[in-house]
Image (cartoon, rainbow, N blue to C red; front, side):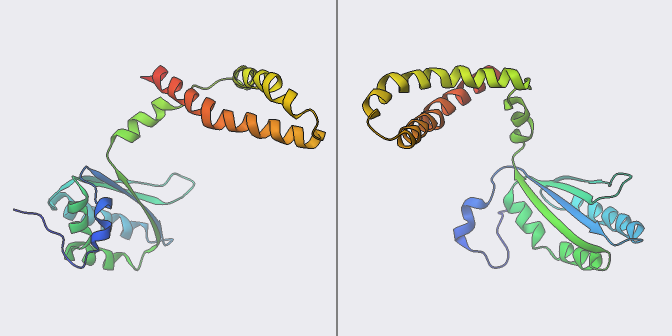
Length: 192
């Protein structure tokens, strides 16, 4: 069976259609006193979703004891199957039923699964404030020395404020454009 998009479709959006699994998280606010109705509805949604072609699974996360939004998470094999679900009469019927007890919703779509697991590993390890300051000084110090030896003698005739601005701009530019990317590469190699 060949997959096709149903309904109107703007071909300019084609690059946004994910060829890999798509995870959708919906945070819903439920009207007070209507939680039981919402929970029965989510069971119906999961039942329909689990039979829908391309669905990899669905689940519900309940708010904590202090309240909060109800989270509904589901996943499709790709963006085409998700699009078919979003335009399906089954979904439209379910969404019509929820209008009386869902007061608001926020939808987040995430493509792929790798980022969920790789991003925490790429984070910089937790270090003390003094250690972070010492590391930053170690990176800035050689740039400051080079600036003092190479640039400062050439701008001695300028007013103090102008010299400080030029030095600050130069050091900031080198740190952002040269040292920052180098530090990121070294950090990424350490986490591999």
